[in-house]
Amino acid sequence: MSESLPERVNHVEKVVHTHDHRISVLEGERLPFRVATLESLTKSIHEDVEAIHITTQNIERSVVSQQAQMKTFAWVLSAVAVLIQIGVAVWGVVTK
Image 1 (cartoon, rainbow, N blue to C red):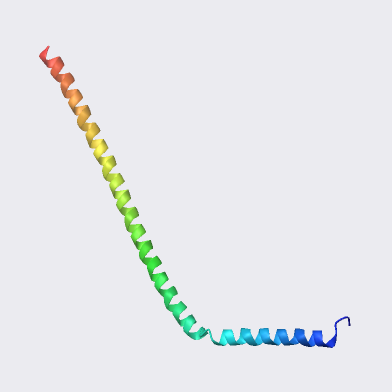
Image 2 (cartoon, rainbow, N blue to C red; image 1 turned 90 degrees about the vertical axis):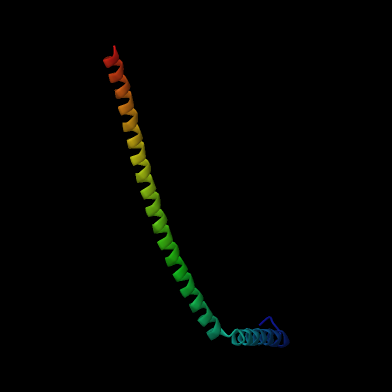
């Protein structure tokens, strides 16, 4: 026992005071109110995430649709260019 009795009592008083302070802080935090607030916030966040997911799916569908339209346009434009070239070639053969 290297510590004297007053030092040990002082240490115990500090620990008790610290615990009392922590208990009073916890009691003053209104935990049920905070939990209820968190529950409503998490529900709101969940709904927002669902809306973002739906929006993302709609954007993905739109992008896929536009890509398909661009491919179709490229094929049509290529076909028209080929038909024009064939027409010019045929015209050149017919007029000679």
